[in-house]
Length: 224
Picture (cartoon, rainbow, N blue to C red):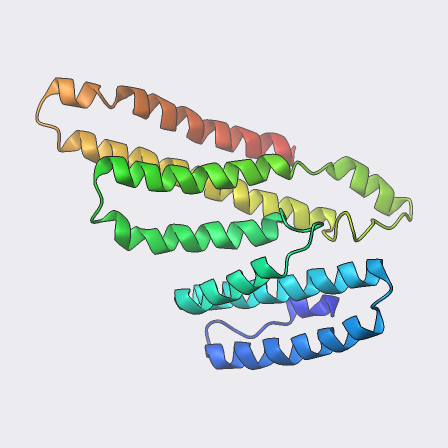
């Protein structure tokens, strides 16, 4: 079951129906094993995490194919199956943020400057809050694993490598959102007819520029 993470259909060659069939068959086996481990919380937590990640995996496949409705459907199921131990898992949060960002692209074209900034800022604030809630202690985890101590599935089902990969993706998405807000502000300033109108955006320039570089600094510090 753990190997299912590396055994997914191709988003290039396989239609979404194939993804659906494989997901349903795997979920069937997960349900059967869940019945066998009803009174074993640690095994139940591990199975629950695999089930959630299976929906996330399928949602990512649909997203790459441009099938945003299908991706949204699987992400909603994944959210509904979250437990206390993985409710803030960045592996779940990042695909949701990516989908919402992509969905709002077409909407942004018809929005005012203030509405565009507000929409992206809301998405960005959610991502930032989730990142702050998931400050993993990689050093402690590596020491535990090298010492032969298994991590408690109730607390965490991510390996140190998965944590680095997920946090890297989330910080890069955070940087991308900040850069998008800066681009919107610059575009707004370009259509301004006079210097006073341009100057009114100066605070936003400084804020988004500074935030973008801070996002990269946070990523650099985390990886180091």
